[in-house]
Image (cartoon, rainbow, N blue to C red; front, side, top):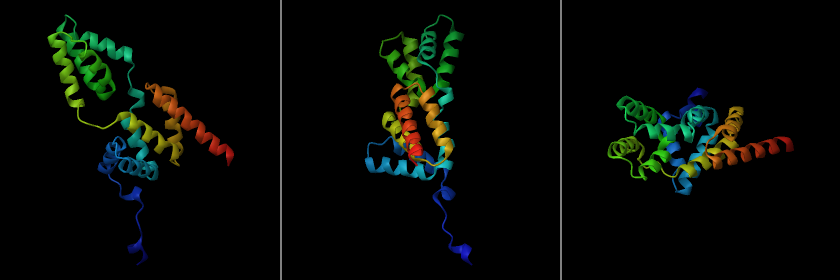
Length: 183
C-alpha cells in the first residue's frame, strides 16, 4: 500500500519537452523564468547533462576560418562548389549564424545574398539572448552534483570558441576545485 504514496522525483517525471522548455527559458530576459530553468536543470543534473551536451555540441563547433572559407565558396564560379558550401553551412546551423550575418552585411552578389538569406532564415527564430543562456548553463553546470558536469565545464574551458564562455567556464572550474579543497 505504501507504494501508492511514493513521490516521484523531478528526474523521474521530466520529459524531453520539459528540457527543451528549460533550454528556451535559459535565454529569456525574465529573471524568474530563467532562474527557474537554472534550478530545474541543477536538480535534474543526470538527466539534463546529456541534453546540455547535445545542445552545446562542443565537439562539432567549427572555427571562424572554416566558416569564412565556406562563405567565400558561396561565390565560387563552380555551381557544385557553391552547392557543397551551402550544404556544409546549413549543417553548421546556429554556430555559423554570426559569420553568415557578417557576410550578408557586406552586400554580396545577388546569388550569394540569396544563399546567405536562405541559410539564415531557419535560424532567425527568436531564441532569446544566447549570452544569457550561456551564463545560465554555466551556473547550472557549476552547481550540479554529477561528476560529468565538471568534466563538461572543463571541456568548455578548453574547447569553447566563445572567449567569454571559455573564460567563465574556467572560473567555474576553479570555484568548484576551491570548494572541494575547502571541505
